[in-house]
Image 1: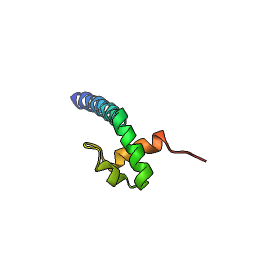
Image 2: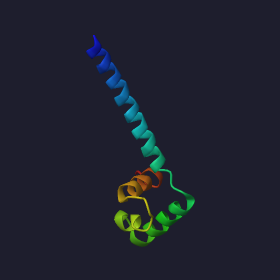
Image 3: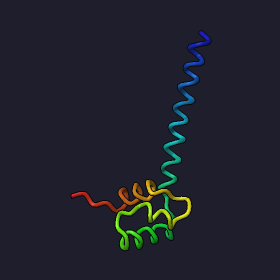
Length: 77
């Protein structure tokens, strides 16, 4: 019986970890006004060169910037 209680507790812990991970990802997509302006300006200059853009924004990865851009400015036709 102790084993099933442990298993249940482990599943609850895993669920809270995935919720915390999702919250962290949501926070990472919050860009400041300055970061947003820089991303827009850099995109207009160099296009989809996310690594180059990320090099201008400390603490941001190319993947974060691309995801931000695609969720915020991508146009679907």
